Image (cartoon, rainbow, N blue to C red):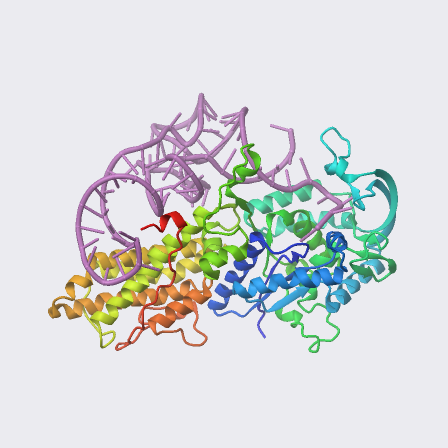
Length: 536
RNA sequence: CGCGGGAUAGAGCAGCCCGGUAGCUCGUCAGGCUCAUAACCUGAAGGUCCCAGGUUCAAAUCCUGGUCCCGCAACCA
């Protein structure tokens, strides 16, 4: 079998319900996966949850429940949201999964046997109240420990360390030789600089069970668990079927069909050091070759209303008029799952930061989706049914405006493929909306609603309607990675659907046959207006 | 001189790599249209492209210096 396109997201930490950043990353990866499928390639999309760790243990204790029960409860809210948002995953990660635990222990044992893991005593400042060691970052500006830490004392602790330093030189060479390891390029630069400064430090990979019991036990010392690095990063490989002892029976995919991963979709906060330094070195130390290293796409962050509000002393946060809050569920309540997907994907240039504000959310939805795209479909179907009761008809009527629209539509698939080489999905969407604008202009300028008054213009009207309906059919396919259910709704109304195994290269003028009768128009995106604007 | 990003019309952004009339969306103003979700289409006003130098026939774009904003800095998500 040909290698599938293997795409993953960061796994979400289950110490709270999902927020907009979680949703963006999953929607982005899902749209990428759908786009690649549309080009005809098989895809495996993996996402899931990081359930271990100190914060979960502490939060659970505070709530008076076991970590197992707490995780179970919080974990459910993630897949529920992904279902709602049409995030179609092929595999699902839960780090408490015994199949995962087995591989983590296998890798740790291998590295231990190879002398890559050793035990060392270190000392540091420990907060008794928070049950954690503190770093200099936790100090107050004057160097003291803040009152939130309670009593702070110097403590000694023995832990296991991974010989990161052995591989620092390899990593530098690897990064220099593989500029496509990280996208966008500026993130790679940052990583290379960061790797160049690194060197001597090894990575602490354990916690004594006295302090943290909620994790995967070290296979060579039952008094310790491993945490975050070997626990979470390894999901990309364990759930891809790496060293699967029950191949075929485990329910995991065949590793050779997936690896190396084509794209780890992650946020900019976890590139350095986790995904850019630890992860490739872990893989390298376990014997993964340079040619089999994964690739990484780094996306930006959503800032809440320009982040100015939290800083300025005038704390007057803008009151929300339509949204209950800025959580993904509240936004989807207002503008639908595809409305949210569209906003997230269109508003953020992949890799950059963007602002989250109610104003922008409503603008994107009401303008792009309702006025431009939705209204285009609506007016088109109304006219088609009125003027072409016998369905689409052949016509040799043509003109510059017709040619212009055809040329714009014909350019869409190629432009989309080009833009998606660097995952610029916002460009694909902007292109689609621009084409819908052009179709609106085409209608206004050719004025079929005037021509239709005289039966002598039948051929001209037929040509115009054919052009707009074809345009809409093309657009429905091109927006489908970003808005899968909207694509289906458009196609239902058009009375057309792409046949099985339809790919982008099949997207050519002439999708709809003569005699085709478009369906009933239904508003795709009802306007969502703030209360004071509904007045009339 | 720790690293990286940003500064372009009232707002949000593109253009910068590969110099050549400063562009898009929203908002504002005026007009058109009526098939359509009070939607659509056309036109206008609005900018010292952060500052100061330099290179050039020509700089938003290239070079140097500076200012301000944001993020990250390798033992704990």
